[in-house]
Length: 351
Image (cartoon, rainbow, N blue to C red; front, side):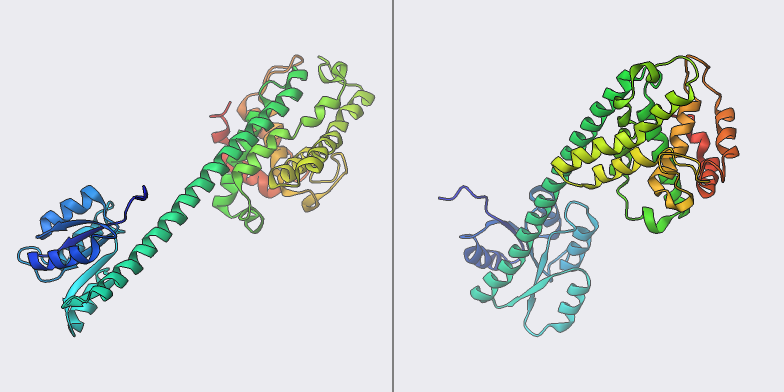
């Protein structure tokens, strides 16, 4: 005997003979429940959640139409397929039942082959839908696990750079939080919507954790220097953008160019480019700078400004915001600065 659980049927009919006939036709293949009135049918449906309900239309008290109305109004039972029982050539009843959500009819008197086939068709649909749902849930769970793993890897790699850079603390986490605020605001305001509507924001935000991974290639003497860098030291510091791209390219060569790594590389190589073309490493200008880099530039600079450094205390939100605004059209994308102005108060909740 198979251990596989049988599909279940609820028969609702005030005539015991009809219940007996349908049970004899269906019980060998399905678990059969039965109710002889509408109220009991609703209670039974909510308790056992059958796969299909076979429902008589004409019953004393609550008729079939009343019952299906309540079934469709309940979150627990609204998706259960209902097959009405009706007399032959009763087209008005059929039309009304279908309009109320019935999926099929079984005519009286019962033909065992017709009964089995019509129930079987609905059971196949139920089982197919359930299988698709279970697979979707499994895929979602797998995606969530992969995303957690991805975020953990990003956090670990970012920490490698952070642990060498004693000045930055939780820089990447806070910059990512600011980035998320900006992206949400851009979506709400349809800023660069043709581009960002295709983005998976979770992947985008988590990939930004690696934007400073290239700092692992910067000497400690420069990375942790308490004072102002010399011109030569600053040139070496700027190399972290290209070095970050190289590191991520090596990962891509081993694991494939997935969205996460693709975006991480864009962030690493472009978050220090300036709108007016005076940034580094390539001196890109305007919209030639990838949008990811332009958005992160604001989040990255703001985070640096409101954080303590050995050579200065953290700036206030108002002072940092003014610096961002003053950089409109030179350092930063003007449209993105306008977005920042509208949502910058939300940044203070992250600090």
